[in-house]
Image 1 (cartoon, one colour):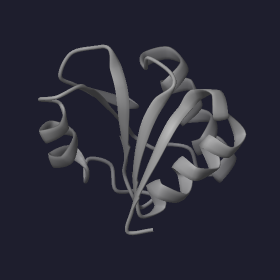
Image 2 (cartoon, one colour):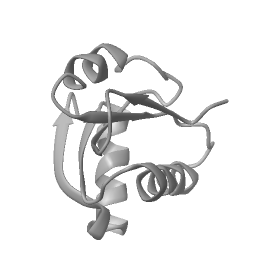
Image 3 (tube, one colour):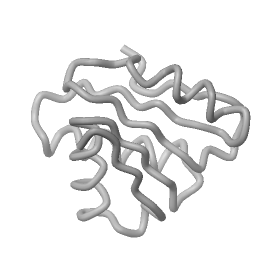
Image 4 (cartoon, one colour):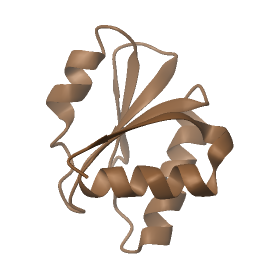
Length: 100
């Protein structure tokens, strides 16, 4: 499974993080709308542990994003965004938490 979808054109300075876990694609409408303003990453969670999901997100940010990024997290994705920012503060400029 591809673990990240790119919306718009780089640089990718924003990432939207879905809820669930297990709800990949649910934030696609938000990512699509925001991509008219900036490049957006939509990472998908495949790991089965919190640490694994934090590492997946870190990897996506390091490989695909222009860091530091703004993370927009929805539900579980908001918690995951917070955990990632706490462990890797140099990767995150801002957190936007929705339904958290």
